[in-house]
Picture (tube, rainbow, N blue to C red):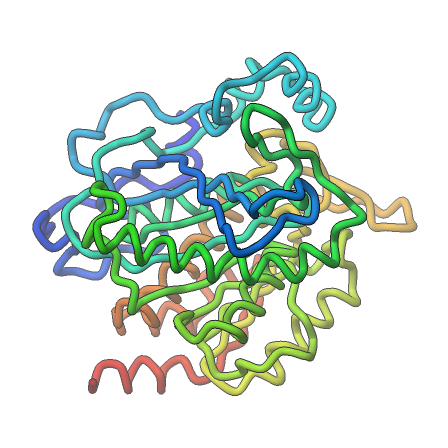
Length: 392
C-alpha cells in the first residue's frame, strides 16, 4: 500500500526491449519506470589516500541501485536493516534508536523501498549517476529517488563519506560522524566520487561480472543533497567525465568553475537548515550558470523534503510534516510526501533523460510547471540544448 501511495502505478511494458534495456517510447517521468529495481552493497578501498578519521586507507561502503531482470518482480523488498553490512549490533541498535527514536524493528516497519537485494542485473547499458549524501547523512538516505532512477534505466552509485556519514560500519565497527572533520570531508568528498567513477570503470571492464558491460560511462551524472549537493557541483568542476549535475538543497554561490555542465538545482523555500542565505546561494548559482540549467523551488518545502525522512519520521519538520519558522511561532505545513517525491523524481528523470539519454521529448516537461500551486521553476538553455542533441 505504501508504494501505491508513494508512486503512480507502473507503466505498461509494451515497447520494452529486454536486450537493450530501453523502451521505444519515452516513459512517463511521474511514474516508476518499466524496470524492476535491484540493490547491492560493496566496499571500495582507495589505497592512495589516508583517511583522516580511521588513519587507514580511505574506505567507502557503497550502495548500487540498478535495473533488474524481470524475475525480481514480486520478490521481498529491501528492509532498512538490510543496508547495514554484518547486521545490527547492540551498540548500533542504541545509536539508531538515539538518532531516529525508533527501534530497528520499528524502522523496518516504517521504511519502504522498491529495491530487491542482490537481484540480477538487467541486460543493457545504462547511464551511471553518482549520489552524495548530506552532512551526517547516509548513503541510503534517498532511496525514494534512487529507486525511481533505477526503474527508468540508470545505475545509481552512493557511498558513505566515512567520517561525515552519520555512522559507517567498517570491519564490524561503527565509524561515527566527526563534526571536527568537516573541512577534511569537503576535500575528500569530490575525490570520493572520482574514485568511485574509476572503480565503476574497472567493474564495467570485468572487475565485477554482474555489472560488466552494463554501464555507459560516457553518460555520467553527479547528484547530491545538502553537503552532497556541494560535492556534486565540485566534482563536476574537477572531473570532466561528469556530464550533468542534480543539486538538492545547497549550492556554492561562487567559487566553482564548471558553469557549462547541464545542472538542475532544487530548493525548499521554507528551508530552516540553510535558511534564506543558503537559498540565496542556490539562486545565485543558477543566475551565474552559463550552460543549460533549471531552478526548481518547492514553495512549502524544507531541507529534508529532499530525503527519506518522510518514511522514518513523518513529523520531523523542516520539510516533513509540520514545523515552525526559525525564531518565531509561525507554523508551516510542508508539502506532503507523495507530491514532494513525485515532483523531485519526475523533474530528475526528465532532466537526466534529456541530458544523458538524449530523450528530447522530456524538454517540454522540464520547461513547463506541472504543479503551479506547489512549485516555481525557471529554466534556461534547455530547449536549445535538447534540440542540438536531437540533431547530433
